[in-house]
Figure (tube, one colour):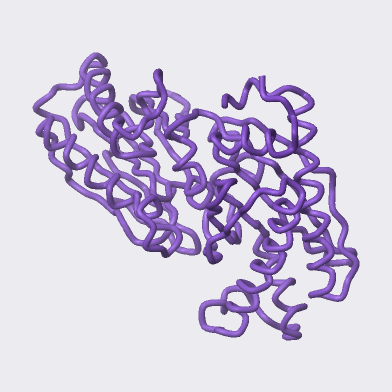
Length: 163
Length: 208
């Protein structure tokens, strides 16, 4: 076995999937939330980079479903099951939802609304959140390894740690 | 208004807006640091969210950003962006503390307010030139300062836009001081989609 580890990158308002031995990463999460849903034994995972909490905010006729928590997470779960994950075995880890600039402005406090929206969707699908690092006022880069089910979190000027 | 349908004349106008704003900003920056400050030709970029981060070195790039929200006849967001080295150099020049280190910023009230105030003056000059040129009213918020990953900081400016568009239009202008340790600052102006037709109408360009 000399499999190469590939890093699957997920952009802003994007989602993607990964199977071991590859890992999946999204960079520079601020108020956005990165949510990983995975099946530990099957070693498959999906990562969604959510920008906004609710698609009712959309003022476009056709919009990118990956942008909003309420439209992205159903796709994340459905496609994960298509890839062989088992519904009862699904677990979630999440990070992000920071407030990058201190202000009383509603839009600037979108981070906490994103966290809430993601939690509600996971609850709806009865997927337990086993670990999270959310809120605060710092950016995060996260990387998930489906082989170990560990989520690596990197912040500015701080060492990396695992959830 | 859909960004992708901008005509070349409209793009020229937006570039000119960047030009005028940055010219004024360069003058005010020059007065603050007692050095000649030049500006580069602005570019008008219509980009995806991910491409926006690449304009500044990728989503993980550590940047110093001053963020302003604009309300009024033109609404949108403005960033004044410096690299950490440049911000450090700028603070040294403005405060005459030649050994200042950026990592001490949050323990140094003086340096912090110097940086904030410099950003405020320079961005104020940028915006007032825009306002004079378009004869449209713009009210900037107070400056919000943060030092963090570009992705984390720049998405704040996308939140409003992202409800109506999957692209952002950025008028990107750079000013640069003439010295060995050149301080280079980026202005990112992101007008809300709804403000574009207001700008064009204000300047007497037919909006077909």
